[in-house]
Length: 256
Length: 307
Image (cartoon, chains in turn cyan, red):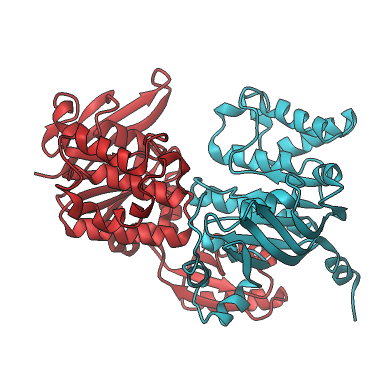
């Protein structure tokens, strides 16, 4: 019997078929074929230079593929890049918050960019400030916030328009272990509400929090499965070992 | 005489408003591989910059090879190697030109100390006529290390050499450090990755300009108070929430495949009672087992006690 919840889980939010990007003779991303379902936390791993950033840029509508097919949130990565940008969230490791604006101004700015109405902006701002425990800091400049708060705020503005999917590129670099975990609490909670999370990280323990994980080596997806199955397949004790046994074969030397 | 010694070293920014390094004292013995472990903002870079004489302390003192970082700054500069966190070689010079430049500045030649860098340099030698700016991240890292070593420094300072580097390259880099240590070079290295801590002889855990703990990695793990348990079930996010709302939970954190949990009141029935609670909550495939804490567990616990 298929329940409503399971039906919903079956919807593909990302679907790619032989998605490829060439730069001259160099094949940065080579025939990537995979699907990501609604509400999934999908870990997108790979060594430096494996092609993760290139793949992510194509999925975000920032780079037109050389060949293959892909849809993101139901929109075509060749023709509907503007629609994609409106319907996804994106958070990079270099937080794109404005340091010279206050917390409240940053929220208002991003909410405005994503086309929320004034009424929605007001409601959303209040809700975010309460949820993040930043009510007292609403009028503080972002540059005065500790890194951990910037990170949480950055995630919150990236999903202020409630996209179906959020892309995150190494969002947890450099923060302390407690903050890193609090951040994952936010990710878990967002995914629990049905948002799809597509995330890259160099912390192998974090790949365990993902429903499924793909590992890219030299432009190819070399493995894709749940962390438990990957560990079984590679007879490894940890995801770190799985990653190591795949990525040490890499021929391409890296640029991060 | 220790290779490096810090004595109540303090550095503030913004006219004293931010204490980047707050009254820190420790020393590093000759030949030691010593790790400064902590997140951004812990004070790692400020410590490195004071020890390499690039920044003046507000108060306190420090010495490297017995030389004072303020008075004897010129002597220190000739004796230490420093690899900053940000790539700081000349982007428009080639690999070989960069290495030659640093050798010349320090009054030596590539040939004279080639043995020391050989293991590392052979990996980038095929690209020696390539401009440094055109190198990949991993190769830049190897070139920067070669340049920091070319004058055979007595103390090597490496500021976050592995940040943002994938785990395979990180492992290779630590292998290189182990080989360097065998040649008697004292190494101070900083990292935000707690799993690298176990590769050091001794470590200092840092947060917000303060030392939380300083010991061998085993010493830090052994000083963890109380027992720690790893818990797992079929639905990990729900499990996390259920564990956190359990009456006997002191703390609970995600830790890769498992959640790590400590009890408020721990006795021989604690595990059984928790299992019963989780089964009542409908969790399947529950696994609970006592574990040895990692450095990261220790960091979380000590940092939590401070706050």
